[in-house]
Image 1 (cartoon, rainbow, N blue to C red):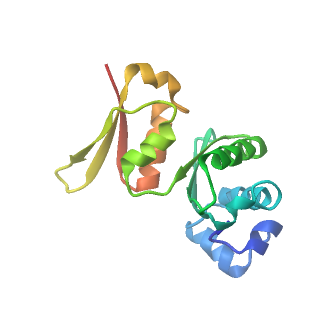
Image 2 (cartoon, one colour):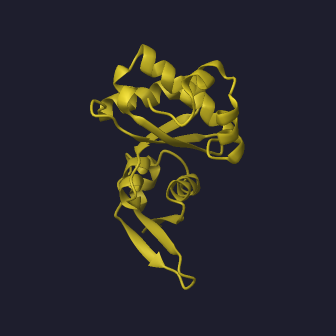
Image 3 (cartoon, rainbow, N blue to C red):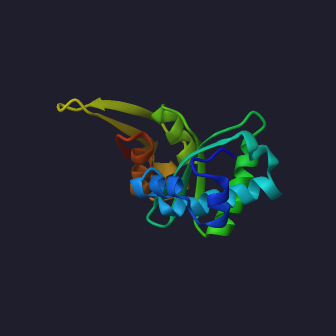
Length: 170
């Protein structure tokens, strides 16, 4: 798996000056080093198809949800990503969601909120020139959400660097 840090630094846990500067600058959070280490272990021992995939970022939401943003390699399937997520959940003791990197908020929302089905995504242009997205969800689908709507809003907002709200429709 392609990661932003050196493989040796991640495996040993001792970061070189370059990797330490990446962590210190905030491009990579300290907890992400552990996530990368587990991903490299999974690639080596269980899911060889991870080799051509790219790790972009991980977001931890209230120590209850870990959202991993990746780009799949040519041989990675959805079933393999589900297997990787289960292994990560066991090793890190946190709920894990793996989503494909995409600029489209709707695609990210569909993947993150699964198995809940969304009605759609509205784009709201605010007077200050910024954009806000509202993900609409039927009321009966709320019980299928993998985490609280606030946690999921926070995750989507971080992934897309813009304000995202989840609205449950009556």
